[in-house]
Length: 92
Image 1 (tube, one colour):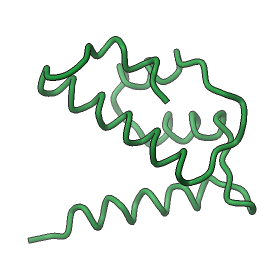
Image 2 (tube, one colour; image 1 turned 120 degrees about the vertical axis):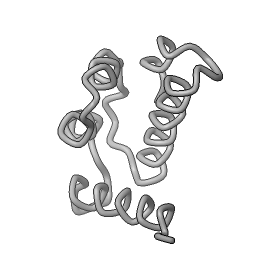
Image 3 (cartoon, helix red, strand yellow; image 1 turned 90 degrees about the vertical axis):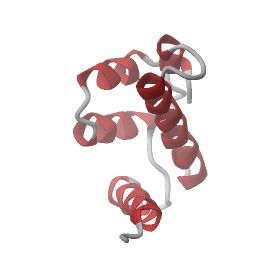
Image 4 (tube, one colour; image 1 turned 180 degrees about the horizontal axis):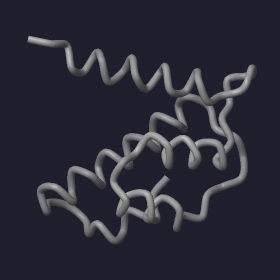
């Protein structure tokens, strides 16, 4: 069986390295551009674009937390469990 979790973590790290600057930071604007490019779901893209993001650059920890929030929203949309999908545009 493939190592799906390992592949996910590797992809997260590779994405951050690709889009972050030399100091290991990524601007919220750059992160939104990355998500726009890397996410296919039009509805999710609209939710992310509607977000009011802090203008401070974030490190890998912040980046990981934000991706985790997006994953929670995807899980909630898919399963109907947890908070309302509409609330997901307010996260991270």
